[in-house]
Amino acid sequence: MKFLSLPLSLFSFFTLVFLTYTSLHGLSFPDEGYIVNTAQRILNYQVLYRDFDFVYTPLTAWLTALGFTIFGESILVERLFHLGLALVSILYLIKIGRLFTKNILLSFLPALFFIAWGPSHINFMAPGILVLEISIISLFYYLMGKKENNARSFFITGIGITLMFLTKQNFGAAFLLFCLCDIGISSNKKHIAVPIIKGFVMSMGIFFLYLLATNSLQSFIANMWVYSIERIILKNNLHTPFEFWSPGGMGKLLLYGSPLFLSVLTLWKNKKQSIGFCLGIFVLINYLIGLRPETDYVHLSPLLGLNGLAILPLLLQIKKAWQRYLLSLASLILFIIGIWSALFFGYYRWNAPLITQNSFVSNPHVRIWTDSSTEKLITDLTHKLDAYGEDKKIFINYYAPMFYFFLGRANPTRYDYTGLFMNYQAQAIQDLNNKEVEIVIATSESKSYQTALQEFINKNYRQDKKIQDHYIFVKN
Image 1 (cartoon, helix red, strand yellow):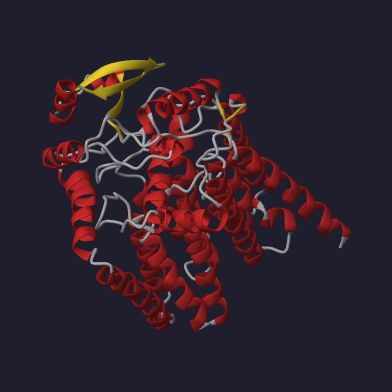
Image 2: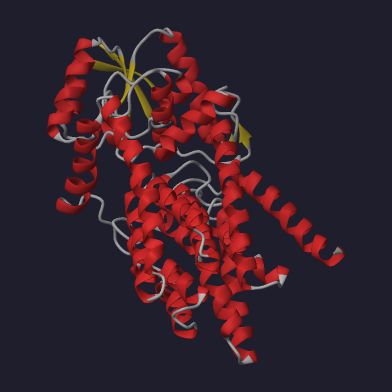
């Protein structure tokens, strides 16, 4: 018992210290700002989709709003709330590990990989990380359902699939496809599809009843069509180059392609009816579907957190000692790279490394650590905007809805995301006119945009102050 308590204590201490540190450092004005400001709009009694646009399905915003309702509105609350969800998913990863082996150290392997590459890199309530945390919990109930032939576990799995669709649709589709593939391979397990479908249909039905009750069904369908189908599939606006082919060559190919290589090896080494084969399918399908439409560091790093689910059954199946040592060494290197890159690589790729972000932001809507330049920008902008008058309406003419959140000002338009189509720009211009918005904030880059919205701003507002690369325009 003492032997078991020492690894558990060390693991718990490392997890809490490391993830608490990474959770409370770094700030993403665009993507995190989009989530927290959407949550704030919900708390201001605006109905999602009906009253304002949201490019995602709603669960990230709902959960963030729930955290704000209980604990108050700040980035600190959002980060700690997400940390709690991440810790729950890590607990379930340990439970999955225990289904394979009684070796306590080996059973930690899936959790350690997820810690190194998941919530330590994407440390806020982003759809891409939250959906994997839900997926991990749902995977455990699916495996337990198969082990115990328990309809209740499969019903919970079905609810989990709905929650995944309500977080990031492609991962919900990935888990549904995983279930269908695994059930199809297991010829004597066809009956398990029934409780999964029941859980999925009933929970999804509740969501659609909510849309009907709030008169937001049509707006939801329009949002999903424009931002998911038209923008991504038909117009291919979010297409990014594969990270594998960027500078770094073979090293990046091995790193970013590791879930593919490892899951295929796991499928090869495990029999079709085994749990190991099931995990191989899970990792492979999530990787292939999660790879597009954007294949960059931000979207790839959480997928690398699934590597432990492929490595554990692979390690247990390899018989030759030299192969086990080689795989163990490769696993250790991947884990160390994950920990190192979380601290020393650019936070959220484009920002200063977390280890250098040691300036505390005292703004009551923030209260975490960031880099000195960002801290000064937040402080200076807050003081400058307050000097104009706290009742003055503002509009942010680039993708940084975090400003609305920490400034405590409402967005006068429907759109926190500013990559707008022409008809949306026309509506935003109408809102700026009708609501007599007096202040616009832009950057050097957004000032150069040749759009109808920017032309309207150029004609009707004059540049008044500059703070770092940010410009404050006031109405003529």
